[in-house]
Length: 376
Image (cartoon, rainbow, N blue to C red):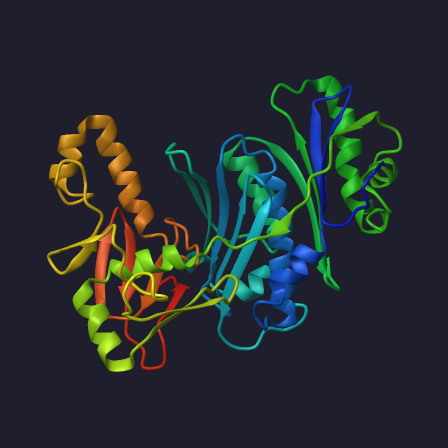
């Protein structure tokens, strides 16, 4: 039975040409992400198009990890982050300043091209190397921006169509695979022309009917459909681990003043509260498997050295040093899921720390502790 084309991603290939692609429809997943924050209409459309694009690209991931797209703007749009992992679990957040018109283009929201950029990150969870590409926000749309990036950085000729409205985000990705010959040129031109007929075709009941409408003259083989979904990886344990990095003195001073610490996830808007009760009696920042050293919480290592320190990396050897560095870097990933490639602000205590080019600004606010992605 062919599944309906709702929350559906279907990959396909042209049987007699080096052309591949995928179509996507985000329905409940898109609406759940939008329900987390009161985004203006123009920004909701941009988020939907970016979600569809990132999901189409993440569908080809061959490892356990995530694809993270960040838009850092100098205009009304300050930051947009979309993350999709290999299982097609999606989440997104955005920050903006000022009014956003309903028909605003990416170029209008991003502002100064010279001060704006797109960062595309491949973040493996198995300890593999991190890949990151950075380009200026020169396109007028997400589709044009990614087409340019794929052609220049990945040397893959691509066509991308995206649309988001009325609680649904759709997309079509076409790629001319490496090794394509001149004999494939006619098929590629015909397939690329389908981008202009995509708006009418996406009313189809299922992916097979959609592909038949888009490519009536080609032999298309569709693969098993996948189901994108909204999922946030924040958790109480991860948030508590991030707060421990502040040091026990700072944490205890806030606990003494307010009695509780509140952290809000900027992706799913979930709130976490902590107090100083003993382990087992409720939410607490104190865990038995952590020890205090030099005023901070640290996980003890087999060598007795402070995790992430030069002594610990030396004792672990070259391979262990690399894993230690990766583990230490991942400690900076907050429960709200801000990527290591994202500049992160924990709005708690005034302090700046640096680790491999990642800035953390820690600032205290009187009302609560917030964890939000920021570009400052």
